[in-house]
Amino acid sequence: MFGVVPKSIWQRTNPADENNMCSWAMRCLLIENGNQLILVDNGMGDKQDQKFFSYYYLHGNATLSGSLKQAGFSPDDVTDMFLTHLHFDHCGGGVRINESSQKPELVFRNARYWTHTDHWQWATNPNPREKASFLQENIMPMKETGQLNFISKEEPTPFNNISIFTADGHTDKQMLPMVKYKGHTLVFMADLLPSVGHIPLPYVMGYDTRPLLTLEEKDRFLREAAENNYILMLEHDPVHECCTVKLTERGVRLDRSFPLSEIL
Ligand SMILES: [Zn+2]
Image (tube, helix red, strand yellow):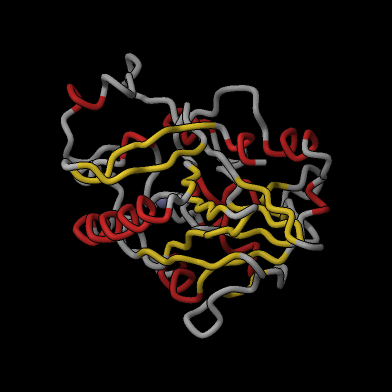
């Protein structure tokens, strides 16, 4: 998760267990936008086999359906399923196996599923390095039901009050929604900034396909975030939901972290 940074450094903030596994979150964002109910990412789901879950084991009591219920909604209420990118830990919760037919079906039956045209090409013809992250059982059912919709350079956002920042370092055309809300700009950082531990520039994940580009994108974006006081929502941070950043002599650093509920 921290690329070239030595474990002796990162384990102080993100301790690993005896199997060298760390705890991470798969936080999603639900946006009520006029008469749209937009869900941003949906975790990894639970349809993979035992072997898969021995590498990426689910833990904790939170579930996506439970959290939706807590917010007063059901999966059928979601009108738009926005996918930052199609790695399994961001889109696997959008497809499940039907118990009686044993066939895949979409969890959000009434939703348009959104991806980027270029990212779709990238994910459906994967390079060998990223192949293990693009699981076809998560991806193809969206297309087969006809619920898949595309964001592109020509049509950069389908939503009012939400613009989309694209980044190409982690994967091709990762999309970060930038939401205008009560005078704030809230940015869902996905894998451009998975946790507060990734704020210093060299902390780039080993998963990134173009790490030098991530460095540039992070540098540019974090400076902009510091200047404009963006609220950054952290998908994978096990502790911190949101943070702001500030410019210091050593570069951009954490300003403070807080739960999303603080601005709701
Ligand atoms: Zn990813």
